[in-house]
Amino acid sequence: MKKLIFTLLLSSIQFIAFADSNLLITDAWIREGSPVSRVLAGYLTLKNQTNRDISLIGISSPDAGMIEIHETIEKDGMMSMDYIPSVLIQANSSITLSPGHKHLMLMNISHPFKAGEQIKLAFKFDNGQKKTIMVMVKVAD
Image 1 (spheres, rainbow, N blue to C red):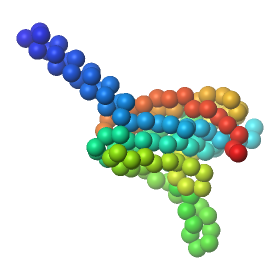
Image 2: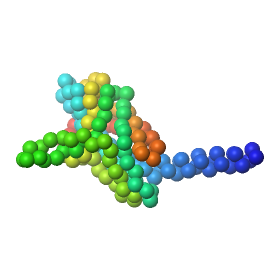
Image 3: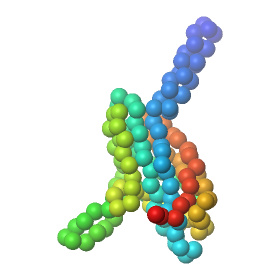
Image 4: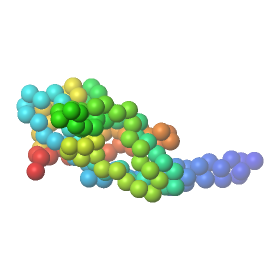
């Protein structure tokens, strides 16, 4: 019985490690703002290397009071940003959050982020996965 439990536990650990390696977050960065900025934008690419759709449903950071996903859209000749509750990453594909499109909005930041600083972001997905990464603050090109 102990051997069966150990085998099942080992199998589940291997599955978690395998599943985690199939969801990648790359090219992540946060735009440096002015010293008085309380809201900053973040960008990244999410790559889903699984055969199932996955949605990003939440982001948090100890350095931001709230992080939302926004999309820049044009309405009646005016540009605006709309909140979107999640981002779908289709099976075996990727999606890029970039300036002028879908992006992260870090609000109520704890201090002025400076270029070269790294900020911890924690991502939550609808399949239960969580992923924490360090993201570089950069001056926009």
